[in-house]
Structure formats: structure tokens, C-alpha cells
Length: 240
Image 1 (spheres, rainbow, N blue to C red):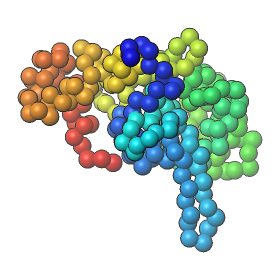
Image 2 (image 1 turned 30 degrees about the horizontal axis):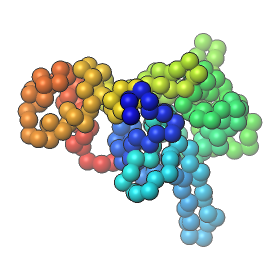
Image 3 (image 1 turned 45 degrees about the horizontal axis):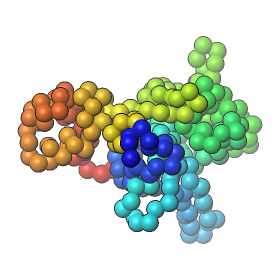
Image 4 (image 1 turned 90 degrees about the vertical axis):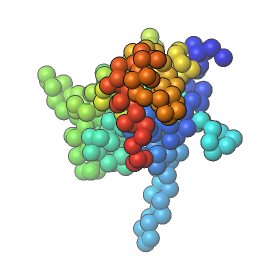
């Protein structure tokens, strides 16, 4: 299969732990986004959360399940999480996005960037849920007379590039502070690559794990050393 033949919506590319590492969220968090959750607190009503990240069926637990579009959706949810907004509060508003826009995968569409803040804010203000109203007011700010997402979410949205139909076609992974690591379904079979040099992230890390010095790996693949150090830092830190 050629890289440019990968379908962003229906080709499973990443396991949940892999996608969680790329998005810099705990695997348990991404699992609940991708597969939903069901909690039964003692003496209290059952709490159920539907999936909000696209995940595909699989035959084995170690098989990839997240397509590229699910990774992009997860990036937005990661930004919301980093804003300190409880996901259980904002879930109803996120579901409303798809209804309001009449879109599937609304979290991975440009309309989230252009109109999403207004939709989320108006939806929250029209409910009788004070927790949802507070959450929306943390996510949305007024700038130049318009309601827009706060700086954290906006910074994540800036990492996305969209196609002519409005869906994410490329993203720069948020986990990296220095390295410019890109996921582009048309390159590297959808696996993360270094923007500088174009080498797959896992190829460079594999050479490092083979006990090659950082300078040798950087020279071999044409990766700036500080970018490689950043990638190694993410790959070797303890799981969240």
C-alpha cells in the first residue's frame, strides 16, 4: 500500500498506548475517549460516557485501532484537558458540535476552529447545568469582540492543517517541546516523522535504542540534536 493511499478515517494506524504517547495523555484517558466508559460508584447511579474519539474494530488487543482522524480528535481533547476542564462536563457540548455542524468527526474539522467556540458557549449558556456553563467559560474567551478558544486550545489548533473539505490532513504532535514531529498520512505510512529530515520517529529511536550515541543518530538521519534529545526524552520517560 502506498502512503498516499492511506484513508485517514478508516485505516487503523496506532494502538491506544502509541496514540496516547504521541498526544501526551495517559493511556487510560485515551482508552476512555476511544471506547467510552462505564463506572458503577457504590451507592450512586451508574455513570456512562460514550466514545468521543474515532476508534475502529480489532481482532487482537495489540492491533492498531486509532486512525489518523481519531488522533486529530484526541489532540483537541488533550488541549481541553490541559485547560483544566473536566471532560464529563464538556462531553454534552462536544456531542452538540456534530449535531450543530451536521458533520461527522466535528472535532477534526476546520469549523471547530472557526465556529466551535461560539457553538460550545451558546449551548452551555442555554442549559441549566452550572458546571457546564463554568466549563464553557473556561474554554472560551472574548477577543476582538468574538468568542474564541482560550490560548491552550488555540495553540493546539494551530498545529493542525486542513484539506479542501475542512478535515485535518496533517498535524504536529503536541507532546514535543522542541522537536517538530509531524503526522501526515501521505508520508511514512502515517507514522510520526521528523519535519527536519523526514525520517520516521521510531526509526531514529530504534537506532538510539541500539546504543548508538545521539550525535551518531543525529548525523545519520540529519536531525538537529536538540530535536532528537526532545524525542528521546518523551520516549524514555515513565508512563503517565
